[in-house]
Image (cartoon, rainbow, N blue to C red; front, side, top):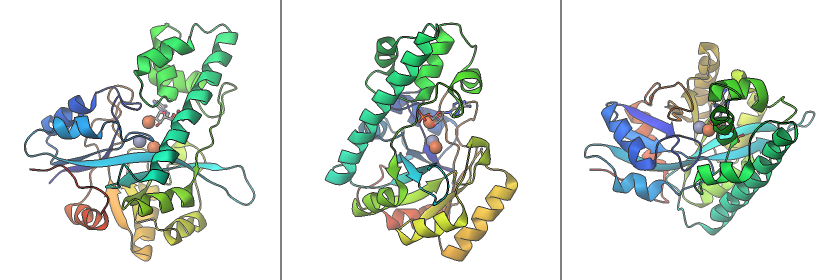
Length: 285
Ligand code: AMP
Ligand code: FE
Ligand code: FE
Ligand code: ZN
């Protein structure tokens, strides 16, 4: 069994449509794939409808959250959520709030770049996102189209990283509130790439403890952005705290170089995750 529980489609900041993504998953030899677009469930129906025989498709999402330390600015944390009820009103409202937050913030980033002479245009980027959830990768692709940089990665390295003068923050969900919302909707919250220091500042064990008290169910341990030491630390915490351990690629199509299935989840951990989710069912058969 090969199980990848974290992938993105063009409904957020991946490059393949949900239908293409499930075909890619099967062609890569996966038995289970979770679709976890940022802050949206809009790809679920298409992924389920296009599911190749023999592939299980788990409906999921990656919710943009923040942890507020006592003595530092907020830290960005991503919460994977599986098998929740997409119609749960409070969680649906939070998704809509985040979508609007991303639109305002994307426009500010693009207008600041344009004001400094970079040939990017917000209406063009919005059109290219085709109604999906907009993120910095959409701005990165526009910079590639305009010939400013030659890759999405180069756009992040030069202009879009979180210390760039063009960076604009967004008011992401307070993570304990996010966990509570996912649980209220019958879902399974898993802390995504929790110790990936290569992505920026990360939370301490105190925050993870608080997240567990709020209802966190799992930790994503095997992730391409985690070092071996970071994985070991998380594995120890999971053992100590009785949490599910997952592994996944965080596939984004050609917006990143990681192939689908680059990291995977053990079958018994996946079974535990299925048992914990009551808001919706995976597509299987
Ligand atoms: P945002 O959600 O708008 O803050 O953008 C964050 C997203 O940008 C992440 O989910 C990744 O998909 C992507 N990202 C971050 N850093 C890089 C990078 N160096 N190269 C490519 N994509 C990146
Ligand atoms: Fe992303
Ligand atoms: Fe993430
Ligand atoms: Zn992701």
